[in-house]
Image 1 (tube, helix red, strand yellow):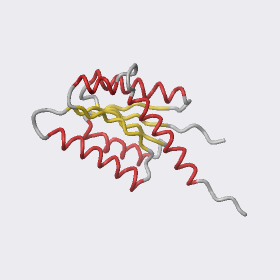
Image 2 (cartoon, rainbow, N blue to C red; image 1 turned 45 degrees about the vertical axis):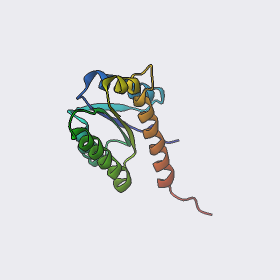
Image 3 (cartoon, rainbow, N blue to C red; image 1 turned 135 degrees about the horizontal axis):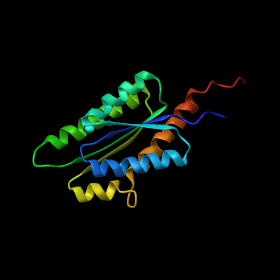
Image 4 (cartoon, rainbow, N blue to C red; image 1 turned 45 degrees about the horizontal axis):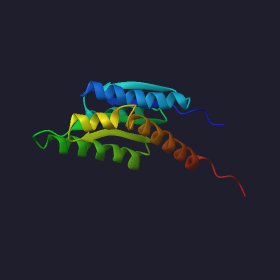
Length: 149
């Protein structure tokens, strides 16, 4: 039986109240699944891919949960931050085989973001943790040595 996966939860703290809800949902799910985890904080969503890459290079973790929030403002900054962080995380998953649960909430308003992040509502932190664990399991399945026939 395989050891439970060790998971890094990387959270962008730009919106602290929303970040706290996302972390609560993710860590709660990881604890329910008996997955050891560590939480690290970064300033914003744009920094999440870099943090996960550094952690991946360390070899300490089996999977990653990326959490944060980007709320649309009056400029195009939202599009750049949301799009580039998503692209970079997708690159890490596809190119480097990182098992990543994506939990960056994108919304037009703080109320929409809260609805998605709150643990008593849509709980996107929990969803991201579940996605991460599913991808770790899939990677382990395909990395397992073939059985002789």
